[in-house]
Image 1: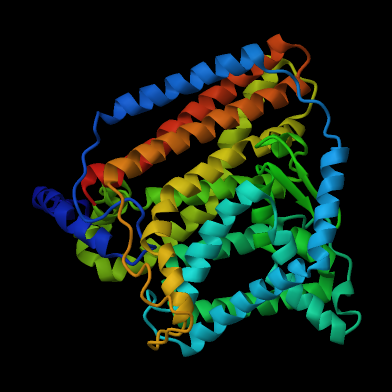
Image 2 (image 1 turned 90 degrees about the vertical axis):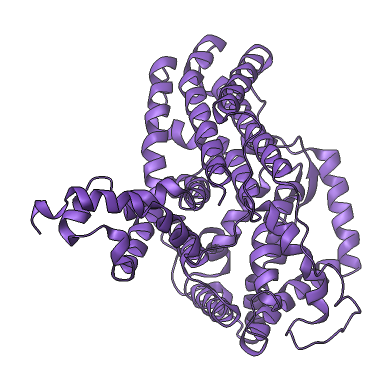
Length: 496
């Protein structure tokens, strides 16, 4: 297309299309927004004041940790606490509590499938949408960060595989040895597919039931091929995801060994990422949530639909927004590619700062070893990003699970007498939402600074070198904090 096609009148059209662009962006199907309730909200003070304040708080916390922090001692089993945990676990087993919880978890999975195929098509009245996306994916994940990796006990797919193994005696033993080179890459691939379905799959009750059925068959096939122990450690991505979140909990549950108490977030210092694939998995926990927030901002839409470079306009002969229907599939492909590449972009930035830390601290450890050692320090950030972006869904839709339990198929039942409870959403004030988000993001970054510095004291000889090594990591944390606040502030400032 000739360059003259991008004429002055076309540029005027581009500007005039901005309002239409925002409306079109708001009309795009997406996950429920956790940041807007239909009215314009202006930040109480300018955004730059929040950014400067958060950065100052991070620097101050860094100085406090640098002055008072000491290298953590090697992790050792707490004999008394663990023994009491074992005794408590044995008591629960006598009451058949673990078996009951596994049965409930498996029943929840089965009910999600049944209500999806044979229940109402209204996603707000069908049990499976609220239970899976809000109660399990969000609520249970955050609970895991408080009480530990109880999913290792409740995993419904593991329970189902064990039931099949009772009939098919060698089913869970596997047919071939799990290739160690695969590590956690299958879990990462499945995690990416899951996030893609969440953001772009436009799931409804029936399609969610289909996805869950397919994931169940995939897990059973993988258990048959690789064995239950290896697959549920490396391949089943919910197990990997929740196990990472459980490292931050003050309770440490190990199947067969009991429960022990520890300081909050101390589990992040007791082990490190054991492969590059697990490090990329952690980074995707961070980048996927940031991407979900970024794609809801006006600048993101403008970058594609108003074509600031003029290349698409010159090629099409008109602004891209006028070819919305034709370009929509390309926009989906563009966003999908950005999602897949996001953890590797984060990895490149992360490795750059770790390399600077290695150089300043004059460490003899390899870059790969340092990157794995500091990887878990990013988990508190990933957790608070997830909570800040989605926690209002618990208040607006999650509370409805009480009424949906009595009418899971949406047919007017009242099985437990709760059908009339919590049917209306809880809508907090936007000012409360914003300040809660700011506080959580700052808290997560402060914890990450603390974890990274304690890890540095263990890896670098002397407090001076450890302090120097953490200056690049502090800059990285400040950048993450500012970027996170900016992403959260965009929809509010635009009134979307």
